[in-house]
Length: 228
Length: 231
Image (tube, rainbow over all chains, first blue to last red; front, side):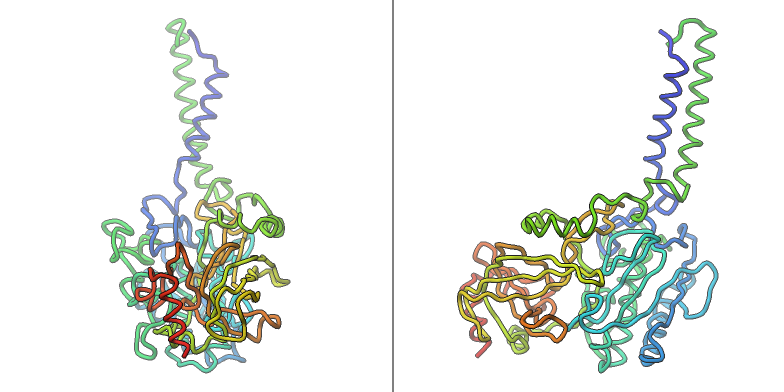
């Protein structure tokens, strides 16, 4: 029995297709993702992030001043809280950085952007196709928009404004809610105004070792991005 | 596989070449940014448009039960710690059955669900059994990126106020809002304004600070507590 070159070429094509479909994308290679704090099935969180050793530079844009300039200080403090929590791996700044990804900080009022009474802020991840307001699904994010509700935060404490920005920046890093840990920034709502947690803690930062998502101590952004 | 030794050698060479080609092509495609199978939601074809999805779901709102529910990435206010506090802000507190869930898309693209409920029992407010009231819930059927790396229909909702569908029975705490059409209510608080009645028992929303106290209670017992708390 002989095998013709045509059959071999067909086999080669089939093998190529199979190989292609089974090969993980660069961002996914080597990661075990969690279905807990990490967004389900995250593959590629940010376009400018490539692998475990890639630093994530997040450029924040103030699009609320001068009308709501009182938001600048808590927004800046929220970014700084993430910087100190994940030193060396990620940096959020209002200044330009190399190889940066963008987060636009905007405002809304009750009735806009799913904001309403009892809603402080919402995250909208955007791909090159569209923005998906409120989505917590995995996608290859080009930039993000965060809308904070000035109807609610206009008369709130500075602590609460910082919590809102820090929490939404957690969503921008592709964290979902940490519903089982009320002592986490990514818990559903703030706890302890004005002296509770309003920046990332261990539960939000997480670990990658031994595996991502093995127990409550291994969830967080390190889980998503593979930062040791 | 082979007819002669020479043919075997030639075929084997072709096979090795084919495998090598497969590896090269596979590597190239896998690392290419335009590879169609990459888990970039933006590159996958949409199965149905947003408008078409809402049209389909409004024709058969019960079909929304089959959609995967996805919670919004939102920061909520701290909910009240007691049922009495939650009721204090509510203008209406009723036990009712959902008659219709109408999904709407606004000019700004936001999807909302207008729930019309037939009142079975009223605890607070100027409604009586048999009345109909309508309230607005954030979200509804959307065509968003999914966990599968595609764009698929799903039920986007606020975790603090899960979408109610026709036939659902619940005790709801509602309030008026200056950002909704006249006569359209909204939940009074996140997390503490909806108590589904499933199999005659209360199911509070996870995240409700006093969920442990009320979840699992018989509906009649919870109704008594609501009545007491409104006094």
